[in-house]
Length: 276
Image 1 (cartoon, one colour):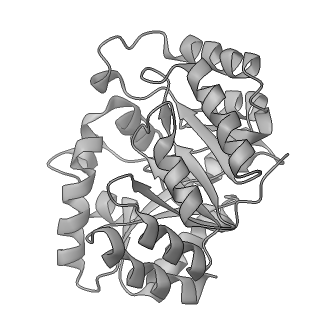
Image 2 (cartoon, rainbow, N blue to C red):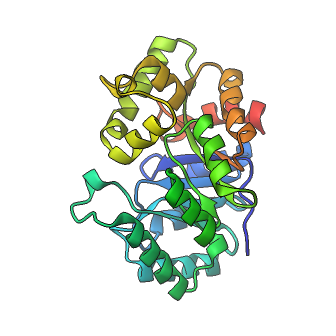
């Protein structure tokens, strides 16, 4: 059974989510709550978000294949489906070479993991795949409901849609800072994206869509930071988010930087008034 994600979702790691923020984001009108940063294979943090909401979909973005046993993940999927039918989307991915000591043959690992989810009776239309490059994007179209690109731009969304073709979900993440002073906003954004500029799958993708080594150096050029972390008023940020939809995204996943927990809610509410 396919699920309806809505046009906009919200992404955070477990330490930012909580019952109050989850309920508020749902009430503001966002269709999906995405739980990031390798949630555990038993998906207990997902259970908390589902219990804190009533209609929103909750997705993982992503369960790390190197850390989570596929059989246990499949069992967890079925538990959540029994308890909250039709409200969970399983996002999986292979993680990063620099953060996984046993990282090897990533493409073959993805295929084997998806095979194991097949064995565990996790439907293809209830799982998605972290994907940036053409090969894994094509695999996401073949074996899952679609792709979950992270740290991208509308140009990547346009290229990804061309690769995926029609009828496949494309759900990119976009960071934002609700701050009209560009220097303050860039400082927040540059500090946050620094870790990603040390991960080869992200830097390779950014080069593939047109950024240079100079853009990636020294914490990122202003052009790079402005592309990866939208900033300004809610109306200005909404224009950048809608650019992903115009480029072919089915849903845009918003990650607001610079606040913590429930303090994030006013920003999401302000964005919702011009997005939803």
